Length: 197
Ligand SMILES: [Ca+2]
Image (cartoon, rainbow, N blue to C red; front, side, top):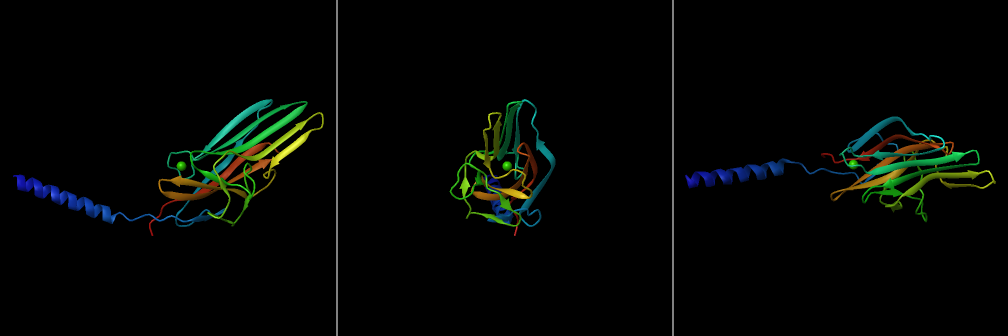
């Protein structure tokens, strides 16, 4: 009887080992092309008309983004604004969650870079794990105006993003627009994912 049980255990171990061997190792791209929606190892998400609108005289809205659709949010877009007859102030920013990072211009560490269609997003860029300004605007009746950030009234520009999944790195782009200093719209995004070669 003991021998039969032992034999059974050895057989189960053998089957388990073989199953492990049959499971192929997933591969990951080490870059993504801004605007790329198709291809092996690419996951694209279309988000139609997701605009974070301003509600006069004061409002704040967040939009969480789960780039690889694994149920774990990766980035947060944030819009907040205040206005009155004597002033207006808008703030658009992106917050990397956890260890995730985004691309900033060289020698800048608090604003989000604008990446053009078909540019490579890879390890050579300037990455930061911190809240970064997409576009801020301030005006008041005494004549003070200021603006920070690169994104006002641009079309077809992309945020470069990178997330860490266990020991893997996933590259991503996020297409947004800021219209007339105020409305922040999330248009779509894509992310590298594991694939079988
Ligand atoms: Ca995720």
